[in-house]
Image (tube, rainbow, N blue to C red; front, side, top):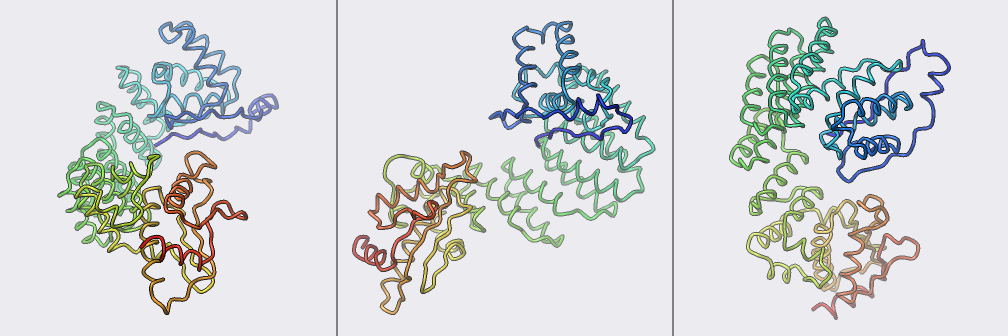
Length: 448
């Protein structure tokens, strides 16, 4: 989970200078491909200065630069830099060692409000660096402050165990699990128990221990706490990610016994797990999202849609060139899925196919199914041909590169290869349109 930039309450005792210092406009963020916390330009310059002066290996220089940075930066900038270093997806891992001295200096700032969440995020880094005394001191400080606030204390332990699991800090995780387990077992609060069990289950799965997570679910039941869909999903996906499909399928039955049906999210977890281990014959269709997941796991299909060469332009042609597993999967999708029916609207005025939400592989197969369906219907004399036919692709607003739609590019290439009469709509560049009768004639004459 990406750690967000923290916002803290401004103390009423702040003077005018402090408020003006805090409310200066925040510089633009620089986004890193690693997916970590986006950096401001000031934080980026700070990290660059640490790297260029080799300050990481020189504590005195590092402390001088840290002190200068915190003193000259608004709290949002300083906390942004710290949050980036504490993120499991930190794009500057070589600077992780300065997270603790930076936190220490920030905690001394007049504007800083003590925040146990920051401590929970910092502890696993200290454990990984071998600074166990420092991490234990920070934990003890938090426990001392929160020992009479059980809800706040369980939240700290939950944050701590989740942070340790995401950083893969084994010692930190084991310690945090012990603290949280003891609190849950000794507490009479149902809130504390539910929150604690929830984090224990998810973190065990994150650490690759789904069997232990399932044992925790059993403990929940024994202690009168009904497992929620959240815990059961985590265990299901925990087994799936490890490739333990029999256990994953057993969890599906267990969910049904507990009164939870297999929803879209659970279905996608199952399909993603099968796809990761190339267990394609086990995959079945559920929704557009699962269509995406299934077809993204098919290397031959994805090579067609991502390549610059030609590709099969009918379902039968596609099935003939695929290997056995992918061909079986495509047949199952085509024969059993209702995705095409949900994406298509057909009346006298317009036949519209909406590809919104589909990845390239899904859009490709749905287009082939759609063409097959149109040919089948248009061959019937009684069929009323719609006045207009429209394929909606979108313009790439939600693509990884804004304004560039991979689906639109694919559909355009398909139209060209098939010599389709459909063209981009001048009024809406996210659509392909043509007169219904023109498309009917093309399908009947050109694609027999």
